[in-house]
Length: 581
Image (cartoon, rainbow, N blue to C red; front, side, top):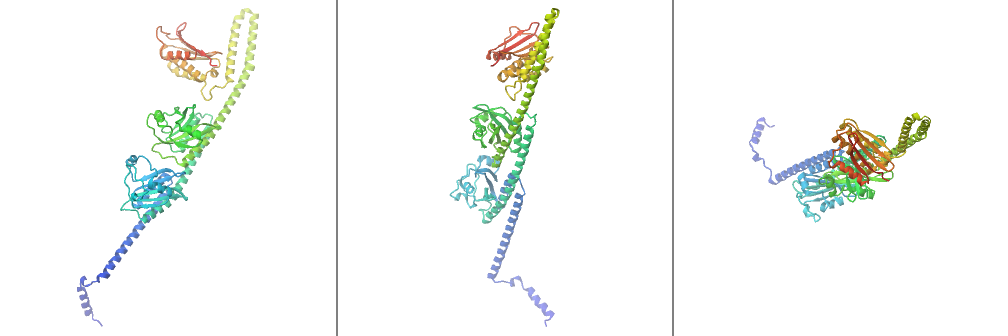
């Protein structure tokens, strides 16, 4: 049995032995250290891979939870750049024909983008990858013989990785990454980006379905609002209503409806949107109008709203629109013009889905316009039928009774000469009343020459209303003859100009208390007379300005104009021209 004392002595000996006495052979010790280093390196790589996998899972979660397509695409590029530590990233998106629809990039600032000046044209490696849809990894871009180099002002790039993105087995686009930190992209980088591309395909599909559903919802709501509004008899500007609603369906700065005027010119009949100021009623040469080309082709087309020269003339500045989509607008079985949607130079080009939406909207809007026009025609027909009934009743009952009364009065005048003069005055009044009623009958049975424009009588009354506040007493107006039937087009414009200029002179210069306007349409002549009780005509004063213009208007139509003193004070303006055949 060992003694405790002996044990203590043995332990003391061991304690006195230093680390220097515990030595391993050199070769086994080196192998152990190497093995430990390998284990540490492997553990570090496992941690790194785990970290990158966690980052991939987080990136997948982030991109799949968003539903706005533009945000999803931007997030995909940002995530890819972060995952593989790339300096630059981009995503090129295909359209239905395989062309570039949009290009989202990360890593370049606005100044660099502006200096480059345009989107890629799919030359060199970008074109190869875009067309093939296969992954491509290069240590140095310039080493590949298919590389076409970089455009002017483009930043230099070295390592390269491109991966295709597919949505439901169809090519959607290509994800490009360049300039990895620390050198070239690895197999692991390529695998990570391919996994991200697979998740991106699902996220893009969800976003496209959501975007399509929202677009169809907006389209359906806009079409319902158009149909309801056009069925309202108080709706006036039908084309303006259509343009207004389209701005709610498609993201755009300008919606116009352009209609043909003649063989050489088209007119902007309606303009809506942030860039619509100053475009309404402007003329565009048919040769340069995209609307005319859309009507000729009968399909949705894209391009410039008009040529640069015409747009600078219309807007007074450099053209600001990047792209316009135009589609024929058909109503009542005939083309009435074209519906144009424009975006500014910095906006994204129209997608295939947006072009389909514009075409569908135009088709439904054309149906709604046709229904509105049919309702308007039906209402006008009802009005005409009612007017015809009133005219028949006036002719068959009122005029005949007045005529019979006039005959009786004439018979009484021949029987009792003492009252003959008074009875003849009453007969003359009855004749004048019969003439007025016949004029009213003639007007009731006749439609205005230009559908959709204000009647001449109403336009003249509007001018009277304009000058009423500027005069001591409201001007009086009398009409004789079929005013609304005879006055249309340019002759109506001349008559309105005469009334306006005549009343303007009375209000400014005559110091009159009263003014009387008489517009008479006889079988051969149109006459406008304006009488006032003002200061009268000053002798020796040359007739210039507006008065001279009235004389020219009369002479151009073979008529006469006079401005003379009235008997008893004041002035009489008289303008008369032959009645157009």
